[in-house]
Length: 280
Image (cartoon, rainbow, N blue to C red; front, side, top):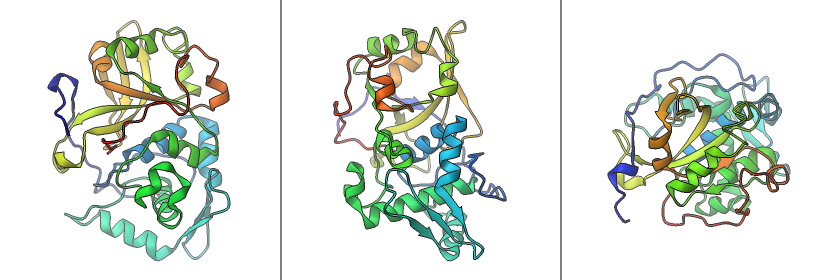
């Protein structure tokens, strides 16, 4: 893989929530969580972005059915014919694994996130044809946020491939965001950037990472976003620095809603995809 200029690397400390106790109930809410040492930031960010709206929280809540024996059934809207069962044993083993030092555990913190994560993994292992990124038979080796959103919502979404700093700046200067910042309350945005990997992530695992944009302050010239490494600690960054880092945006909105908007006027659902680099 070719080297990435240091000026375009997002250098963030790894702040784990590995010892965080699970919240007591599966409730459709995604509270504090931390990504484990698996390459599924793209999926976790999609769930987190979806949870930012009431409609998204309803989708999460309706996807998970709890049973008296401690098991769960997950039915993704994008794969309604393939309900996935997470047994009480599987759930307990996943919690134990992520609490064990040195184990590449699953996400820590919120139970809704963990159940969806486990269910997506079982689905892609059993039916790798479900998602383009499922060809590897796992969600833990990178993927596309738009594919995760389709699995979760059953609705295609589009993304903005920036390609240049000027394009990123143009994205923010459109009325969709800067002149109507409240839009983020109804249409969360996932973005992808190259990351300088801290411990415990080995550099050779890749350079791309997904985040969720939560706020834009046009007066202060800053953006605020959430890193799935620790969702409890939002990060605020200067707009200019941010525009140098970001390579792709994925608005959490249906294709037919955005295809004619000023947000993404020149991109289609089958636009360019980075093939050689994975999201972690």
